[in-house]
Amino acid sequence: MPFARFSALVTPMLMALSAPAAAQQAEPARPSLVVAISVDQLSADLFATHRSAFTGGLARLLGGVVFPSGYQAHAATETCPGHSTILTGAFPARSGIIANRWFDMGVTREDVRVYCAEDVAVEGSTSSNYTRSNANLLVPTLGDLLRAADPESRTVAVAGKDRSAIMMGGRTTMAYWPESGGFASYAGSELPASVTRVNQAVGASVAQAQEGLPVPAHCAPFDRAIPLGNGQSVGTGRFAHDAGDASGFLSSPEADLAVLNLASEMVREQQLGQRGSTDVLAIGLAATDYIGHRYGTHGLEQCIQIMSLDSMLGAFFEELDASGINYVVVLTADHGGLDLPERQAAQGAADAARLTADLDAIADRIAEDSGLPAPVIRSDGPFGDFYIDPSVPEDRRSEILDRALTAYSAHQQIRAVYTGGAIAAQPLPTDPPEQWTLLDRLRASYHPDRSGDFLVVLEPRVTPIPDPGVGYVATHGSPWDYDRRVPILFWWNGAEHFEQPLGVMTVDILPTLASLIGFDLGETEIDGRCLDVIAAVDASNCSQ
Image (cartoon, rainbow, N blue to C red; front, side):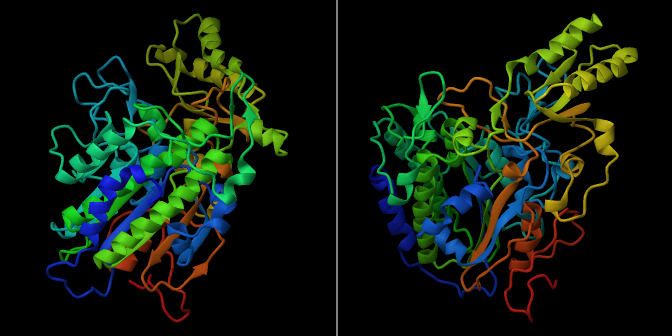
């Protein structure tokens, strides 16, 4: 493990996982544990940049079945929609998870914005101070389907964000995410001993100052300061932080190490894959995303993170090996990411730019010009779903929609504006994802009960952050391929390596895993297809 300050936790965990079991069952013919790993914001571009230097866990996965440029095919490339596709086989159009937040004008509370993993029925809940729930996910996950067929099957979801754990874990009660200095779960849930142990280690680690991490030789060329125009810069950081700096901890490789430590603890504590049932361990690693937002995607900080992740995953897989569990791994991402425009421009992307501040004023001008009190339009940001406020009289809603379409379409940094009706009329695409039109991508994210009255798409390479500051300099969320393309890697003991560069989708993961563990999906409605990951030409895992 790369960080010695976790030795008090890691050493006994390694001993426990490496100790011979009291009674070993014969290894099943098919994997008894599915390990699904999502690396938040691991774009296909970021993966390709560093893959030649992998020597640990990512190198192991490169020896399996490699789809280096898969797709989160839909337009809403955010954390919640992306994670919702991985173990459901469903686009946001089917799952209902259209964004991290959307608007529901029918809720009986002042805050009509809804967080994707909140329970809106809880009194006092808001989109920023909420009670967690999996109720907004309208489709089952692989773990849900396994437990319906076998009540002894277990699903454990551990992640660096609540929405990651909840969207991959589905209806499991064993879902854990960081909160108040440690890992927490659903309200009223009793934390198991493993969570308590990891929380103690996390608390001790946050309480100590962290010196800067060493720079791997592979990362030296990325060590270059990028000025932000405000007296600050990014590109040379090494994750040093003061004692008590929880934000610095979360935006560093240490955060992923804590998640992997807890995942290992849960394997041992819950005897995952060792009880005669097929279990699911869902792991959401969020540090790559936090680092991407805070420092950008192609600087020294992200290089150190990816190389650390490679090392940590290697140690994690070795622990699983020592347990004797027959497991299958899939690793992918919830979305990609766009580097900060200042570095893009310095490296040849002449069209890279930040969003101009005047876009935020369009909704206010529409209200003023119409003579109606603001807000007449609601949105969670400068792009994505936009909603006409219910305060607008019914006989004036079409007028406001027309004004909005005209005003937003005229902005020089907006590529397109579509009405919800135009998106809904588009059939769900069936072509390979690399051939999808912009409207196809939007359709895969459109749910009639949750999506907006119209949707705004920014021009490519426009970063919707007008004023950068250390902490938030780059982002994702667009329908463009730098946000859609993600690696999809499968590995199991005995897997024969091959690499397929054609576009496959994260919705293909569920049926592929089901085929590998011998689980019949029956009449479950999904959007993905089984991928044949058996290299032999005369054999297939998709024959069921």
